[in-house]
Image (tube, rainbow, N blue to C red; front, side):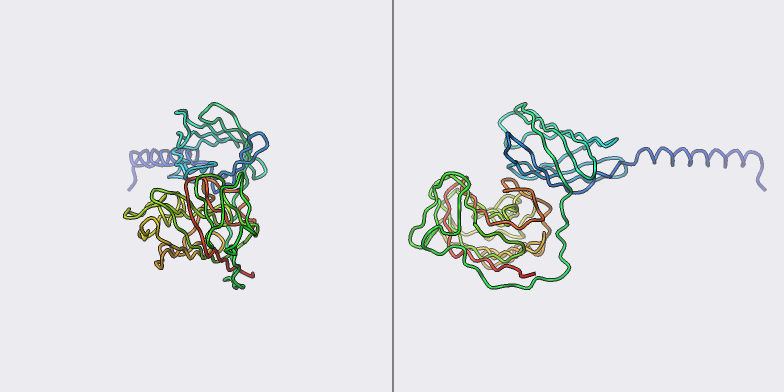
Length: 315
């Protein structure tokens, strides 16, 4: 039999539940901004490709990752978003100054527009669109291999600035730090074979579609990390380190379909059908849905290349 005291207890419990439910509703994060964003920062008419991912933790916290014009993905511990306005800060990475970078933006019509105050205090305008999924509805049908380097000269390639690149004895060389090298041809999905050699301590990389860097550097004897040989820089760590000693020829066999990448280095599969979340620092642009070229990093140290062969997908 339920007496008056029991009724009061039940009424109190129901009130507590209703209050908690109402408060929980107000605690829920606004996730309309959640997802991956392809960003273009503008600096005196020059485009700086960048990238942002927004995620939620629990019910009332947004966090994420940011990639700027250089460097790797930086964690964002807290993203504030309310009434269509976003705000977050991140500490400097490769910037010379110690000041945090400050980002503000407005979400409207599924686009972000805003400002970035850099570590040096300068303010830049930026805009962003949701990154494409790049999911493929069917497996690729492969075409004929295309030899991108003829072994004689730099036909089919151009640089991003001055030119320190040269061809000697059938080898494409960057003897010192300088400009990056870009293929004239662009590709969507493809398989790549590329052979490379570098001196002790050097650093380079090959950018798939000009946006996703597979790291090339002197990592002989090191443990695999997100920024050593075989990694998709800042995003995907290889399963093991297979780097040879400096001065030895090495090679990659890479398959890129949509966002999914498989990397074989020196005969060992070190990344298997992994998803690349977004562009890496130093990308040519942030237009991920578009085809793109190969870009060889030449601004970090000497590197030599040969036997660059691309097999494009026909579908």
